[in-house]
Length: 388
Ligand code: GLA
Image (cartoon, rainbow, N blue to C red; front, side):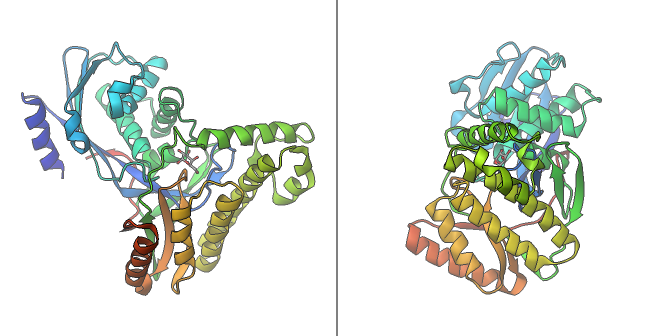
């Protein structure tokens, strides 16, 4: 992969000079959905799919970007003096946003770069292709300009800042954190309120994690994602009128039930309920995994989907078809939507000897019902972003 991309870099940009290669993974979240902007817990892991970047220094302040995935767009050129969002800049608004966020923090980018990108995460599938591009860019800048005091957690936070304030999606920290801090064969149990985290080995013994892509594209910026966040913020303010809490993640289910009437609107009440219950489910699920109770982990995944479907309302018909088929199938321990929602992927835990049937049968029925194919990936959990 690396040699091929370096070769392509030379074909696109020509010339001599040393190049450096980096990789940042996408992520799949096992449980803890829409909790990261509510001060709750998440439990994602980094994938071995992700975004590669080949970089060479320039002597001037020009920036040239080329994506193997968007060959038709050709080389997109800008400069370090033009770090503003621009529709015509297309996907390069992501790396530009990260450069902007570094400069905002006082890190001076003293020269331009030629960058070639290649990603093997399907775009818009809810597996964090954009977060991986942000973390990749952050790592490139940290390494190229020698910003040694910038930790990989800072890289994640800078990526989130760029996504929130340059690219207009009010996302939480989960995706960037998983891409920057992932660890092979482990999921990250992250408290998004404090950023305290611990790595939990994902030992499923006789089962595998399978991602199913509904191939219904979601676009978080345009979707109801920001609305959900606003609804939760309003619900929190209403609860704060009657109790002392900092986030919805501070509440147990019982505390929520005792005070929920402070939330005046029934829809907002459902949103807050999801945030509170999902956080508690995540804590329980990690405990279950530690106790090697994979069955319980699966039941909590199923309950998570139910809550995302009916209370948080971020699922869609195609995803519900996939989850219903999966949950009804022998050998499936648990199945739910993963990521921001409104399309994208499901994540399922499937017994080894049922994986082929899972892919075959769900693939067939989905095509009959929906009219297009689903895609399946049997997951390997990889490391976080690194130079390669
Ligand atoms: C998207 C966001 C994350 C998180 C998830 C939902 O992936 O980028 O911050 O909120 O949705 O859990």
